[in-house]
Image 1 (cartoon, rainbow, N blue to C red):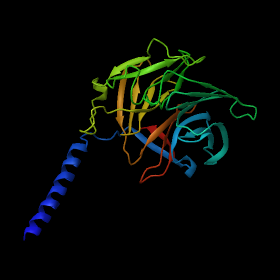
Image 2: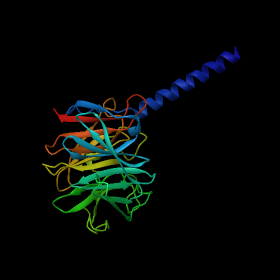
Image 3: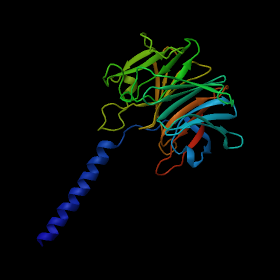
Image 4: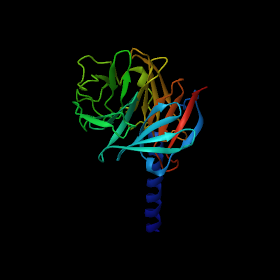
Length: 283
């Protein structure tokens, strides 16, 4: 009889714990119904940790993955990798941008690879150290054509060494020094971030990519941990936050627009979905 009581209390305790975890982790918010996945491009196994994408042209996307210093050119029409471009050793590569014939790749510690004539066999490579470090965990990079500066956001900690300020920094394209003037600075207490998706989490947005819309100039920022898409006005002020359904966006790490403004989001593999690139439209 005593053993039955012990077993009962153990089972009761487990069920109570599971119930509490579910209650405190569940969200009261609905997933955004404004985005629709039009087409999914399944990526090969080598890109299972695809961490960044950028358009080379409207039919080709340059992809990177976390570990290998290789740019993979993916053809949207043939739906396959058509070229691999070696540019660096093994590392933690998180973001890529192509400007004309130059590719820029950023590591999580802030190091930048500038690959000139990246598709040519005579390509040359320059490397730049920034003031960021692994402590900051950098996963975003894009070029602001009007300001003629690069933009980036620390995912974990900004240079103020705090977790309260959401800061987009400006980088000089010549030497990648950080500008004294910030592009924008928000606080996680701002209403735009008031979307508590987990009661255990104090800060609910970790930037995994930043991309500027080619037509509107709006800033699109992904969060891959709890899939979200934050849209800022061209001046950096908040516009809207979208909570993404993880059944469609399991781990969104890359975002790119083609010349017509069509949006593509890449996802790393998860336990239930394989790595992919998705063509996404607004409803």
